[in-house]
Length: 233
Image (tube, rainbow, N blue to C red; front, side):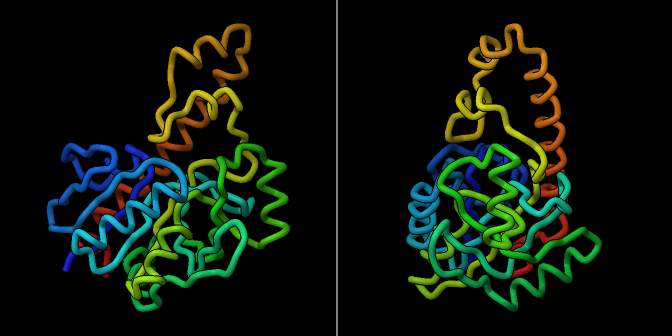
């Protein structure tokens, strides 16, 4: 019985398979599980979740990176939340037995099981992350997991989240980067090049963001290898 895995970004999806992966198309992974790379945002994730259930997935996994809100989290740290919440609304629990098996499987990692909150936009500024952390107690933020959880809740299907921290609480994402980013998370180099003229600090920020993201993607690749087919389902 296949699980359905939803990844917003192309780099997140590539951590699961070397097979060609196209935006908004079903990809069958090596062991029979189903992958859908949907692009960023709640509505795209919601549509992907419904498509995977229609394709026969018996459970859904939200897979990818997250922004850190808890200052203790570092790039590459693992967030396996017990509960996810939309930007406003009631929290939704992951599947308890699945969560327990994943935690046991990843016992050697620095795992945080705290609250994951969904945001309608990229949380780019440390001040905004600090305010969200203080007001909600959430340890990390993404843009898709709560939407996927709601589809599972409505369909009475098991749900799980695996997220690796890409940008920690104290790291800012320059506005030029956010503006140059497409729904796949890919950044237009030409747009960034223009923005970087006369701004050497932007290049420094980009190099740090790249380093942090690589740590997150490396963690996701290791988790995929450790958990194997079914992601410990």
